[in-house]
Length: 166
Image: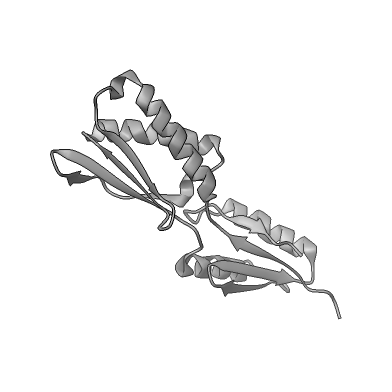
C-alpha cells in the first residue's frame, strides 16, 4: 500500500510580531510633528486579537493606519489577515476604528478551498476541513505540489500558509 502524503493549509498572524509593530508605531507617532498635542491612540488586545485606533478625525486615522501598516509589513504580518471595521464616531468628536486579526480559516472559506480542489479534478487528492485548517492528502507528492501551486493563484481574502508537510 502506498504511503499517504499530506499537508495542512492554515492562516493567522504572529501575535508577538503584531505587539512589536504596535509598539514601534506608537513610538513613531509620538515623535511625529503632525501628531504633537493630538489624540492618537493604538490599543492592542492580544486575547481577543483586536486592534483599536482612536484619534481626532479620519485624516489622522488614515495617517495612523499608514504608520501601523508599514510596521506590520516590516515584521512580516500579512495585511490580508487584518479586517478593518468602519470608522465610528466616538465621544468628544473623535473617531475610532476596530480591526480584527484573522487567526484561523473560517468554515465558509475552508469549504471554498475544498470545492476548488475537487473542481480541479486531481486524481487521488483528498481535502477535508479540520477545525480552522484544511488537510490535503494524496499518495503523490507531485500532485500535492500542484495543489499548492494552484491555491497560490487563487485569492480567498486571507493569506494561506502551507505547513505540516509529511
